[in-house]
Image 1 (cartoon, one colour):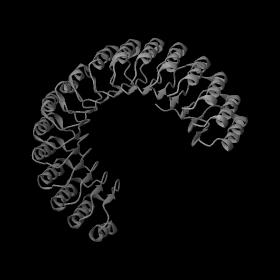
Image 2 (cartoon, one colour):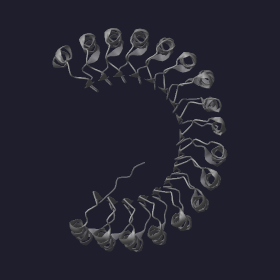
Image 3 (cartoon, helix red, strand yellow):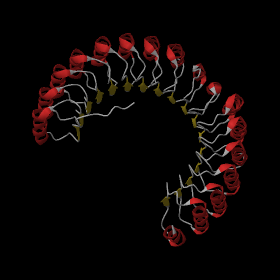
Image 4 (cartoon, helix red, strand yellow):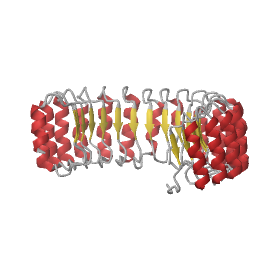
Length: 464
């Protein structure tokens, strides 16, 4: 620690210091470091996450920031600053004119600490990013921040996840978002009881990125004219909420990214979204993984791909599409000219589904990433995919782990690598390739000049 302090006192070139997770620092170390900051004129970035400097260390740092004129980014997560530390840092924001990024996540600031920070935000004109996640702000803290958002004109990013703002705090934030004209990134994940927060999007015209993980009505998105990124994964929306969201997609003209992973949309929700995709002309990335869409949902999406001309990334893993859904989608890929990345992992496509996909690779000239893991493609599916690789000239990434390809499948793919000149990444882990398959692939590497990544792990750990 002494050596670090000596550097800060004397060094005239160091501009970034990462002291993360050095819990021995404590409050005394925090005070010493604060003293050094008062005299240092070069440091612009300081990370003190997880150092347990507590309120006393926080107060010392706050005092230093009143005098320091170079630091622009400060990370203080997991330091148990408490309300007193929060208040001290709030006082700093009245006086400091250089800090633009402040991370105070997981510090138990409480409503009193955040009230002080909110008051400071009303007058501070330099801070653009503030992280207050997991600080037990409560409804009163939410109200105070809402008032600050009505007056602050510089903050562009605010993280409020996991703060249990409650209904009254939520309504206050809703009203503030209708009036705030600068905030572009807002994180509401696990907000706890604020299902109506999303209503603010009806009137807010600036917010571009919204992260929300709570049961929420989605129809408010229809009137937002700036929203481009929407993350709603793991919200238990179900098919009915999915239908509402699909209707919103017909009206939103700015959304480019939509993540609906793990929402149990089922076939009906999938059909509604597929219908929306036929009309939508802005969405470029859609994640529908883990939604139990089934073969009917797959067929509906396939029909949408015939008509949609903007979607580039589509994730459909773990949807029980089966052979019928898989075949319908592959027919669509033969004619679709925009999709560049497709994930069909864990869909029980079987060898016949693999053959259908291989056929689409002969005709499709746009797809660059194809994920087909855990589909029981077997030797038959592996061989036809290998044949397709011999002629396909666009695919760069192919994921085939856990498909029971066997040694013969490995040999077929090895032969394909000798002829293919575009593939850069191939994942064949957990395919029982055996020594013969391994040797064939080794020989292929002598001839192939484009592959940069090859995964031949024997087993794959289960990932929830």
